[in-house]
Length: 293
Image (cartoon, rainbow, N blue to C red; front, side, top):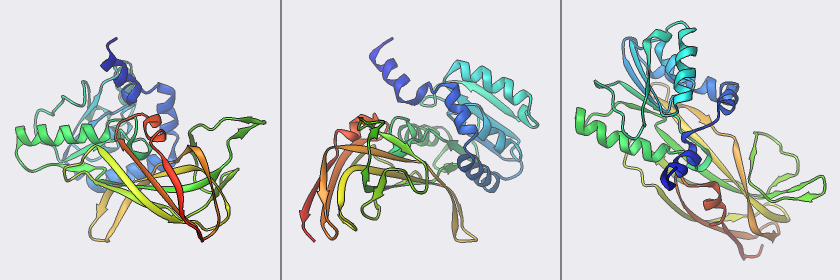
């Protein structure tokens, strides 16, 4: 395996099947995409999905679409998704294509393009790169008009936490995924701030660099930063609302925790490249008190 192949495998190209089961059981994810696809896909339309996994999002689209191309790079998943789709109504309308999402274009224009290669903070998986590559190649072949893109945008935010990293007495400051609501051993020390809005209908840069200032709301120790990612799946223009999918949170530990008091101003800075490793962002985190309350 070459270094590039190893990198591709690590960064989301080959997600184990058991993780896909977790995604299928994730009602927050499934119901959000189902509603957005039902809204966006008109009867008789044509749909492309890049990074199809088990094919479930393509199957949602097949409820209304005449034709769906479901592109998956992992040959094992290709076989799994074909077998599963055969067992589901409308599955015959989905053509599972074993191909690299960076290279594949459908044989004709499509009305909707779905791509869910999304990790919190746009790390690990190749969402930004794949969508940018698709837009460029699609316009070269089919002209300037792009299909509707799902998701349309992503809103990225960050929040300082006092996060406990002790497990049965063992101190292990490592990145952790968090569910919504109250978390054991976790105290929010300031309100979240948006650090980037990625509009996929426009050119999207991979490099993100940010500096922001938080007003601390209570005494404590900032030991981690929580990263929040909300994906805008569809825009309901008539209702002036959106269908969104909020990823589960991710807390990254700081190398040097910062003691804070209520009213302090905390400076946070970081830079990273979308699609990069979680550690690449964790190693770039900076936090310091710049003014005392």
